[in-house]
Length: 98
Image 1: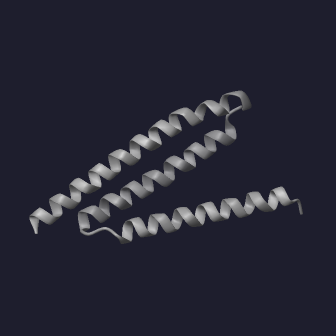
Image 2: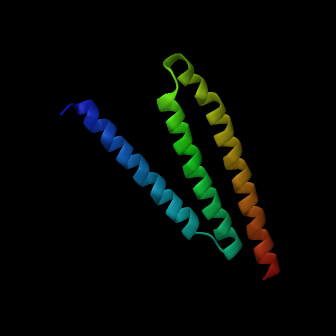
């Protein structure tokens, strides 16, 4: 077996395992029911978006494939900022209601 293939498989497995662990702990470390619901929705949307991005990378022809990274990077950064702010707002709402 080729070392590049072994590295690609191992990298993919480690990447998915890391994503699954991050998803699990992001949901587990929430404080309330509303925050947990939000994190589950964000996790599902995030996994779907990354899967769609990887599929687009696979099916897009070579010179145009690299152009997909620009909107991905911008949308990823904007999405993370929005999710962090929304989660903080939900946490404040739930603590003030208690």
